[in-house]
Image 1 (cartoon, rainbow, N blue to C red):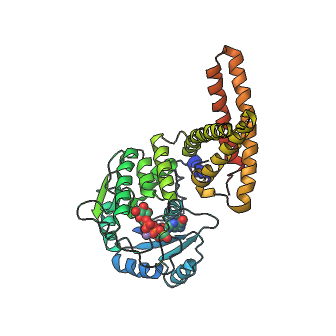
Image 2 (image 1 turned 120 degrees about the horizontal axis):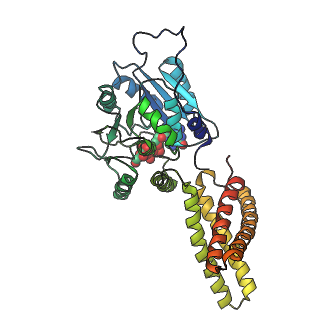
Image 3 (image 1 turned 135 degrees about the vertical axis):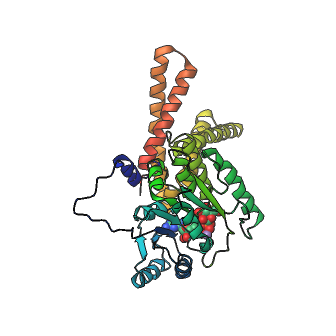
Length: 389
Ligand code: GDD
Ligand code: MN
């Protein structure tokens, strides 16, 4: 399902914390003012420079830096481990067999007990000199969330191309749909938040994709007090961006999830929309084959097989892009999908017949059958074809 199982576990057990044991004597001042979370995937050429820049920027703050690495193969974890050996304020979390910026950031945040948590990209695109101002906005008590914004006051996206800037502005507008209070830069990956505020958003967060700030703010029980501080987005220092076309799908799924209050899995909506397109494919193949002289039975068989394959390919590359099957696994998945949809057709006819026997409305029976068949296809294929890795 859409919600990460680990997070669902957290949600279920979310409740009032137990009181501290009697023998625990708290120190007079908290040991940590803040934690800086740095998600990394193949950033070996950047992490050293970033750690130095953070050390200079955070003079006077009691901080820890938590790198959360998703098994980079370019040596990033080794570089961070060496830095952590030399400086106890630096920590490394390694995750295995998983990818995802949002979930990496959340896991980093959950690993810290600091009262203020900040996030910064590893590639030097965010201006670390803004961090003390972000942290101060929260420590001063004036804000729950402080965001480095490219779109307020004199903030800027630096020298981006026109298309990327237009795309980003368009997404920013669309994102407002999910927000109780408008933000100038809801896609920002550069922000600080009070720890307890983050924890209050956690049970409702989708924990998927790139948009951790948007997800968090849209999941809070009440609109937070927000400080937005301008900065200029810099060019990436070394390496390359991990953003690809799938972030658009992630973003749309996140918006749908937030708009529906998390009640209907966005994957199910996506699956249904692709099903409707599949109906178009079915009718086109049927018409074309008959126009070419095929008998109805042959044309209809071809249409069913093509429509199922079409649904499989689109769901595999969009709805389940994070679990995409490739090569032989993809062919195996297609075979299972055919079997699932075959049983779905039986469920469709069965449910339709029950409704028809009850009140003899063919259209109602047809719709009921289609709904039961589609829900079957969605649920069973998510458990078999695209089961959790
Ligand atoms: N652990 C982990 N896992 N880290 C990741 C992953 C992942 O799957 N994907 C990306 N990262 C890390 C990168 O290593 C980098 O430190 C940071 O997340 C941002 O990734 P980039 O690939 O540099 O993203 P970008 O520069 O294209 O996008 C930035 O701007 C967007 C707004 O336009 C990011 O700040 C986005 O969060 C932001 O939405
Ligand atoms: Mn970047």
